Image (cartoon, rainbow, N blue to C red):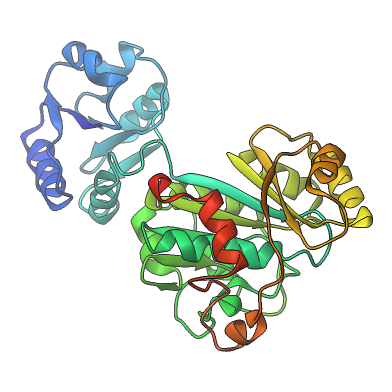
Length: 338
């Protein structure tokens, strides 16, 4: 993956190359817009100098994400050309220097996005939030991981992970931000311990702002090997959209008739069986009957874990080196997938 710079301006050329060096990247540079079209589709990010933006727009290259016009004191014609290109922004230097360094730093970093897994309780009190935190703890031992709290009625994932006193931005602050969020900015700003970060709320009055979640998730995936969503089963249309964004979906439910009936209704409401699986808590219903009732394959059968509440109260999180949670998570997140 690479960055493409199209300009004949010595000032823009030198400015962008200095910023690229700060990002640890050497862009492919073209002074001829026609020649640059050969690399247009394959580059991770395309930077079009204001001096050539009009010429490039006249060539009508295919629309794509990741196109930005870079300029020093841009005029109205530059903005018109940017619209013609379908550019995401006009980056005015030197004011946009920090943003451009971060954008270039992300070139090639999780270009396809990290693994996105949603965890949802098929029935109330099934332990889905605990499992989501345990999955994040397990994977964070191997690669950058973030767990995202999308359940306003939940306990708060920072509290379950012992990060409630850790400084960092929460949902309330993220709602106030605007525009594209860099993966490095998100990774470095949220509460975290080692390679484990969390996005959650700071106060009691909680509200999930879906437009903010839509902006945060791409940055979370670019900057982390695994993103775990703790999904609210009562979230209505918001929950349906977030579940649809997940590559994998884990339903957690007790192996009881009421629990499986509720899970089956939720699966039907979501219309989702592909890429979805079942984690069973203790109950009288057999594994096979649970699979038939829900239409989902069994991922793990997980009994209650002794000392769980004490571990949560001590702020060390739900995952222990051994025990039902560790065994279940190991099966869903094998070492070679990390």
